[in-house]
Length: 346
Image (cartoon, rainbow, N blue to C red; front, side, top):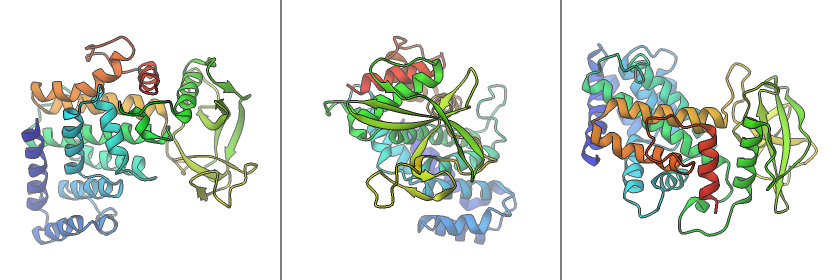
């Protein structure tokens, strides 16, 4: 597995330097690679994004956005290997805790953009089993899968205060993770778990993005956390991924915690990650369920059977918490995620 991943990263570098054989300027590609090597990700984005049209452009932009998110292919590979070799009962929880040290407040969005550029290289065919892929295209699908699984890891770090609670070596529970699973269950099923206390749901409108959310406060052990639910009405609902707090009319006022001097409980709300009215919300359903399923499937379609088994350990860790061990051909559902997080939060 380790050799296969290292091979993949080397192919990515080769594609970059050769400009993928798409007629790119070798000198310009070398300059771009030097910017990436120096961590000047914003310069790469400024240089290429408005005019990107080749595979090398898309690969460079994908690498730049991964860098902005706090990740690189080599760092993700290292984290996967270290998690698989860990002595913890859940290699996925090990992956989540290790990934959280790399992420920042913009990681989810930047990883999503990175995925979109990787997918441009292979015309969004990673999940299409009927499309025959060459070795380079299989590697790109591997990058897509790794990036999506990393999105899930980052999202979990947003819904817990102490990420170390997922580790086997940490005792006790995390109040925010408890209320987060209560909120996810409430949104998905419309039921209020007895271990949490729920306020009445009301609606809030973020005027900057013109988006309306169901707003609810959930309390456990005297600690209260606010959650946004989308859509406001409908059968299928999910909690929005939030980060920090902001006013309803200005996302630039986002503060990291309630102890900030500028925080006013009457005007600040949990702040959704997505700030644009033309962008879908990042929700627990999309990031913790769909991204994880798509990530594992993209990886599985790209690599050999023995490597696929190693990657599917992550999926099996989640499934077995809900009594579905070794059922890796079944997609993960929101209830599987809830059960897994509850089990880890003990």
